[in-house]
Image 1 (cartoon, rainbow, N blue to C red):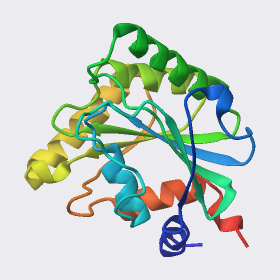
Image 2 (image 1 turned 180 degrees about the vertical axis):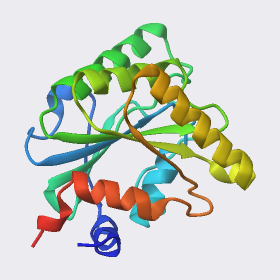
Image 3 (image 1 turned 45 degrees about the horizontal axis):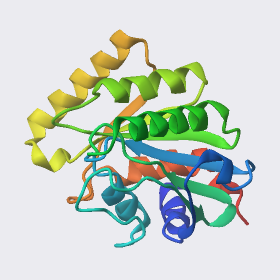
Length: 208
């Protein structure tokens, strides 16, 4: 199955449910790919772009407002895309931030159906402290990660390539062996590469 075939299936993504805690998530079976990132990293825009749907993931005018774990079916109910709560920016009580972080860590470490993590980070401010924390959790859990440097349209071509190379060096220095790419929801940059990663992790090729 090629990238175009993967994209056809990904465009069939439908909303399944929202869960306030890990305990209320769907049964831990099948395949899941999770999207995570700071609240202003463009997560909702990326999900809407990759699924070719304008309102699948609803973005809030107040970053960090979304506190639920949102599940979407990709092709069939055994393949799921997961929109995790944004972190690191929300104007919420410290206790709530700590609760979110615990839920995120539990999900990344304990969710057996999770086959990969898409981590989104703004190309102008890549890999902040909690981004690195997420990556270390993933590494500890032997979870594959693919990083999107979002909003790459905000920089000129040369500057975006430099940001990509610098972030690759940072990952190597931190001992984090993860893949990374440029992405722009506005200019539709990086959709093919992301579709390929998601298709492989969700085993979309086996859908009959």
